[in-house]
Image 1 (tube, helix red, strand yellow):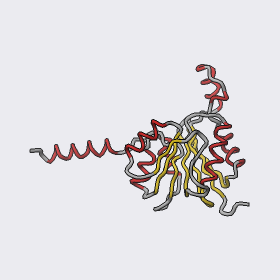
Image 2 (image 1 turned 120 degrees about the horizontal axis):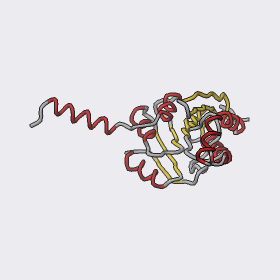
Image 3 (image 1 turned 90 degrees about the vertical axis):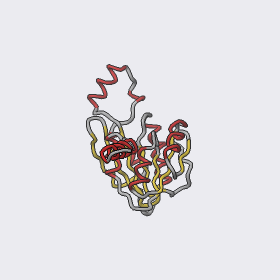
Image 4 (image 1 turned 30 degrees about the horizontal axis):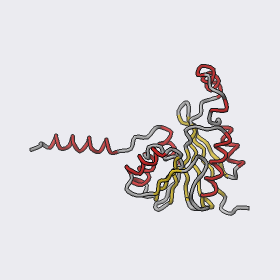
Length: 198
């Protein structure tokens, strides 16, 4: 027989282990986006599936996801009770044109060319008037230089800076681009697909 205190403690432990644990960047992406109940949302880099799980449970959205790492797809499928999660090479989204209301993209690695390819695919699958929320782990220029010197990395191995990504969004045809910083090494950019394409 368990006491009320033991039962409450067990319930609290169950709930805390069940809640998705997201990083600051993912939480800020979710806060920055506009979701309506029933929206179809694409998580364009599912990672561990925490963002997708949150959207499904708390935002009443239909969630799909894609990743270029099969292990991430397996892990996400195991924790989700609905949704379509698939493997595809980076820069390839295997859905038809104008399918999603919102696309969340948070690339973990790549350079400006791979990001351009991903953004073009994201725009293709967005419905007219849909939003793209791009989360970048990018350090300020001075910290990037120090980091590349210390860790001996090449500049082309790094994700683009916030300014470069903003220009890229405009080049790929997104409108009303807005940005926000997240901590020291993160940025969020939101771009909208035009309601009527020219």
